[in-house]
Image (cartoon, rainbow, N blue to C red; front, side, top):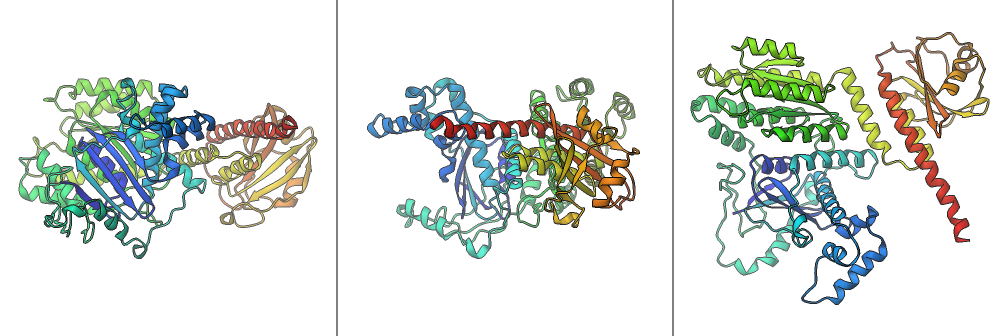
Length: 606
């Protein structure tokens, strides 16, 4: 019997994470006014994806990725059209007749899964159904050669990639964040569609209640429907059912009163974290929490706390998964915070020695990440050792075996303190700057024109300074281009080009910056600014300023000037600025190269 719910009450990200964490197999169908999609899971891993949108077809993905060309696609479609009983899916036809490599086919199918999840993430209204143990793998995946049939993507990795791609598309304006009004989405279209396919069961159908032990939700509210799979009258999804099921399974000896306290607490903080636009917000998502423990209740509780803060969180009890999760987070410009659960002496691989060994290995391999250790408040020796080894913090974790009578209260106190602490970790000044770096890098990837890249540098700098302006290097002078916070309020964004010119004096810091390509942040006596720049833009209260050169083809082409205006100077990570402008320089070179190629095309045709 399928589990059915509404995206308004249980967003698709949470549904996918539930399926993964409970290691369920089945077919997840998602219906929205914006389209329909399907994900197939095997033991919590994604093995197939399909979507109703034409832009999410395997042929289009292969074309846009430049893996095949239009002639390859036309040839494969022609072969399919001529085939009758022996007609194979498009990707199998491309493999057999058009030279598509197995590696490229696998990558394309991975991309299809990621983009299907990306599309679903922005659906705020709609319905999902999960048919447990019904695995309807699409033909594109089923008919691959045997060595490629095992498409089993780690669900947490897919989610991390999909959320990153989603953020990039939002930043680039490709996805508009807008809630779907209830009156425009009554779900009748889904009812009509399903009724057509199941009309033969109409006479014999009985009222169906969703009360099966699916996804570990044994006590779901009853949902009455007139026909199987018709979605009228769905009631709000109650997260308390999930919490109670996890607690019942993992803390069988806890008193009923203690269980009720934990359920009430977790339910109170597990309301959907929605921003003003109706989709998962979570701010900049500059970091991700990765918790390593075999304690399923602790995994669940920490994930609930982090989700309440809008923080990406991933959990694993598999040592080999840790490197994959950390590497993927770093690759996606996410700064991971690694949380180790408390040692469990009676569980193989999770004793004190095991935890110390794994933790030491991760510290050596990833010195840039923060590590939090959870430990029994009675084991001060292990706590001191953890701090001595370099962990960021050690949190006292209640153990049921040590304080049975007050375990529920102790756990609530722990989770409250952990939530406050993790919120502080994600709000530190440097971490906020890291978030801005990560978001700007995501947007930079999508830019193709030189003016847009230059503007992105200006906007990134303006996140850290009150006033900023782009100065174009033109032989022996600088030309003032667009600015932020100088001729209009900073909140209004970039202003029109100012167009005044500044001669570059050979004894000036500007000349040195152009010649060396090195950035400058600080105070320096240079009459150029007082004589030529400040008469145009006004002098700042504090003389701390930034000169950030953008290089392309080993030549400085712009300098971004910035200062704090009338505000008190703040801390700025110059290494972040230099890293970003270095990436912008590479993007600029690519943009100029593409323009040169485009300019040559008419000559070639002629």
